[in-house]
Image 1 (cartoon, helix red, strand yellow):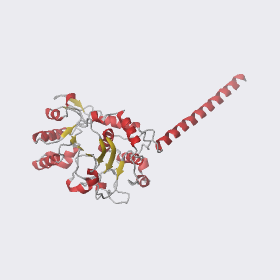
Image 2: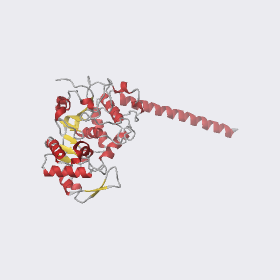
Image 3: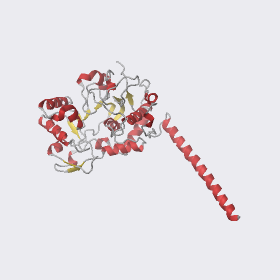
Image 4: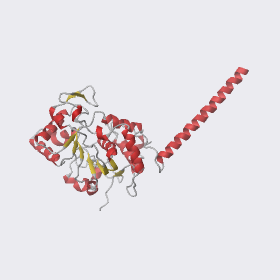
Length: 358
């Protein structure tokens, strides 16, 4: 009898302890979430739903937002910057520098570790001696994506009015200047752009078009992800050769071998379950290091706007894209949802409609 009573007592105490502990954990979680979603942000944890399921049929109400009345949350901006710095430093990771490599060195591709690249003399000669972003700070920055939502937006003058303008994948500007602006301080160029937009630089006409486009960069930074995957090395070498041969005034940069994994690690830690960050998300993450106020334009990975009107994938071509394809290396709708959450908290300003006329 005594043994049975003792067992019952132990069992009862155990149940009470479990119940008490569960209540404490629940209270702690609720308190933490209240801190995160309140006006006084105490942490940069995003706490968004980390799956694409929330972006299905009930998507439209969530995507609606306005830039009217938007205010910068400087304390949250600083928290995010410090949080990002636990994973990477944009000054260091934005580019490999000349002293870190020598001609003939063998590099393993970041996303294809079994495949390698030999560092050519041309590539080594174009590596910056120091980071192109060393000691650079800006009050406002524009990060410009390439969504067709920019068409007829009239955002060109507003974009060009920022202290620093980052553009993605060498998008054309002149014929779309009213909507996208002309200023470029930092421009990315995936090797795939060479094949898709410049015919692989196989003939004189394509090479001349490309040289003219780089000439318009006017001594700004050209950021070439040369070490990501096998397949684009011929295009990278051709680009490097043209830059050297024509003595083009661009400051080349080649992202560090750890950058993409460090950026992905930051977002995964913040419960944003991306597979591989898009160029736009990479640029926003880097910009948190040297921009006090970040404005995003041309970020809209959906085939229609909120009014049901068709939206081109790129504002400058007719490329088709499967927005919710699981085969894509990116989760752009999820990225957009995350950026919109940050917009609502004042960490960044996301413009997806027409810009106000001055």
